[in-house]
Length: 245
Figure (tube, rainbow, N blue to C red):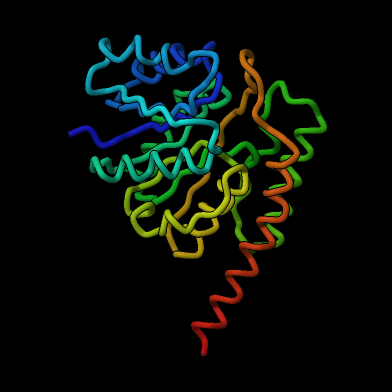
């Protein structure tokens, strides 16, 4: 039985989606892929539809009615994966900023080394980012430092979006209570898993900025992350006080 599902949310990734799918399916191991497309106007979903007959029972497509946010796409995908009994569930971008070959390393970290959550980290050994302007590198690096300071987590790359979960982690988290949709979603999921005591391991990756398509980063997403971290920490403290009564 195939135990691994790679979830790839898409919005206007027509240039990349076929290439990333073929690359994942060329890897050792038997990965399945779920593409969750937010009704991309560039026809991303149609590109995936063309590939469905070629990869029957390995490639799956879900099209949502509009651009609903990264976090909600992953929550949808997590529930989809749990209903179909996948044991290892991955998050990965469609634009090759995450090297698909690192899926095998993430898988081995959970399946063979026994960790519950494996994170592809840009910041274990310095800064492993290619093609980002220095301003964005500094913003991302110090954003992770800020998150560590506020939350107490030891994770170096708190906004990383390249991950492998054991299904037990996603079963334990109340997915309907996950509130954030942008980069704060990535922080919230790590923070929740950490607070619940799951074993987390970061592995070093090289992050390469997209060469095709356009970035989805916005000021609103960044603001959500900054304010969201404070909210997460506050809720955690309130909950701890409630348990102590």
